[in-house]
Image (cartoon, rainbow, N blue to C red; front, side, top):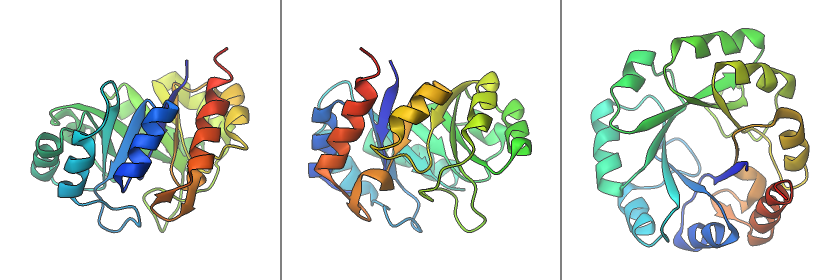
Length: 205
């Protein structure tokens, strides 16, 4: 069964709706430059009201380990997702499991995956201007090759219209979506969230 992560959660309504639709994980972005940035106090409040069995993921970019540790404990974050230039040694010092994001430009982009001890990687489209959330698709043939280095979370440009195609081609461990299910930056579309999850689940039967 392919796991589903809805990322860029900024409000309780979106969080609860995604959970009720069957999302496995919700992502909270603690990177101030992101249009989906959320303050720790707000994330803590939302997470405290989530139903059980929902995995919470904190997304960080080049943040200090001290600040990540504080956020993890304060907000009750289960997993850390790293989108910056974090080193393998940095990842090993975190108090919870880490997902390392790889911005895929070409096959050479995958080589760095061999350096990390993390069991799961998130693959996103490369951009020289952004650390993630580009809303663009990359070459999924490279995602298939990346599976040789660990579990793969497919991200980048996914929508309700193309997620089934992506899963059939790549067969990832999970899929991750943010802008592809929004009605505006930071606000999810209920229809798109429901359709996205339904189309992923339709492949499980």
